[in-house]
Length: 261
Image (cartoon, rainbow, N blue to C red; front, top):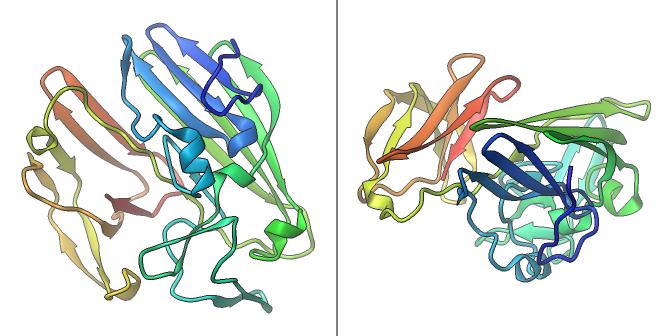
């Protein structure tokens, strides 16, 4: 394990390495992934202006989205008899183009603590107990994340454990910005599995309806994705490839839904 400098000037920044693969995470800034390299090639995007993204509550690199991934349908919700009314102008939340709350409490406001490190792995935790978090998601819990690299591979495992006397609804996710080097996006070969395509309303909120999606194995071309899908099994693989480069996202366990963006 080697600490490295980054544009956030965060001393918790940690580099993990295995063979010709390395990744960099910033625990004190939301356990944000800010680099993923293989054979010297960077495969992460939106990492060029991290301070700017932090100031604007924007996603970047590999952000962890908590307590909800994607957007909510409004500013009020109730789960386990606990009602919440969210602000429409919170400095710690992100909002979509329609002004709806999106992606929860953003990574610049989540200071994780390192538990263990090894040359090829990093484990950190975050206690969801601070008033600024509980006011938007009143369910105390502890989050634990372990990032591990192996040659050609990065695995992220996340666990959530309640720390109060009430159950915790689970709706978190990740938003990795991945890209292939030096090739126009329209030439990327996109492979998606058979899934259920979720029907969205005008505000990009699922309506509850869906239709079969037969899968895809074709060049991206002029296709434009911001689509939600329900997996048909317990796991799935989505990938893009071109030339000698291929990036696959493997949903290994606990992710029944995915957004292709």
